[in-house]
Image (cartoon, rainbow, N blue to C red; front, side):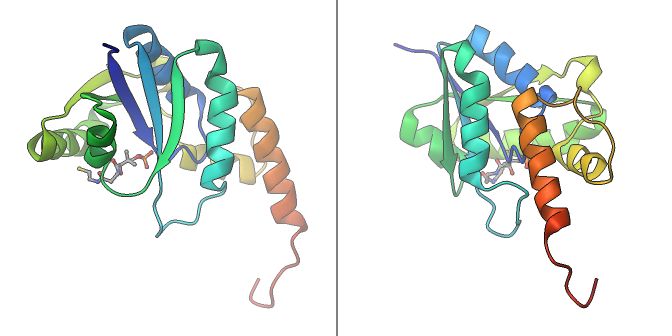
Length: 169
Ligand code: PNS
């Protein structure tokens, strides 16, 4: 019987803080599912398929990571695949309140456990939103994301800049 866990998130895009947690989970479990949750109300910088392709390529060396998308409740994803554990990174105390609520809700809904991994201190300030904002405004994020993501991010920002401006700009 395989020991399975899921690392869920939006991953728009994956950054080194995410990767740190996924890599550590991949050493603790036989199979780690990375679930890219679809949020219909948010337009991402990358499509879900683009996010999955990047994560697959980056995590391929670990050898036990499976990347999929999911729309709906995370506990349903876990139930369908018989995954008993969710692994989440905790960056700071400020993450704890909401993460605790979600962990308790998920446990109450289905009995799935949540395990928290303290984010490595060098990644404690990171989020995908900040990475995108800094990169879009011309800041260097090459040390914050895997090289593949840095390339895709630079290409996407260049494409966005090249897009014709609308009259309201
Ligand atoms: O990377 P994010 O956006 O911070 O990840 C948040 C995510 C996707 C893990 C969380 O919003 C989630 O689990 N969404 C799935 C829908 C769900 O199960 N909602 C109830 C949570 S108790």
